[in-house]
Length: 154
Image (cartoon, rainbow, N blue to C red):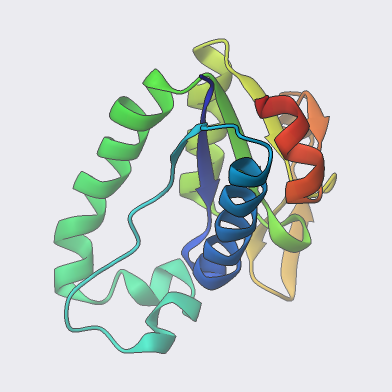
């Protein structure tokens, strides 16, 4: 049984959840049971659009500042460490600072790394983005659909 960890910006929380639902449905249909590890984006008492804010704006929330460190640490050292593969869910090419850290951690641990988009963009979303060339060199393959990904989890 293979395992995969997903890494994504909080701004794409809903899209990632939809992607994972599709992947689980395909896995069930192919009689495959991969272990799927995903980020924990849930925070108590924040509005639904909180996840769409820029990281610098989310960091103004005291509760978020206190909890995010634990969540990132958990994702880096519990989920990425144990997964066979890492999937960078970089919708529209975007990777925030935590996703870049997760990508480099996965690479340092020798994980196979897939990404949703071939572009590796960082900076202020959506208008202040620039290419991050070092990140692209760490990604083994671009896989844009759950249908493609399921073949690698069989």
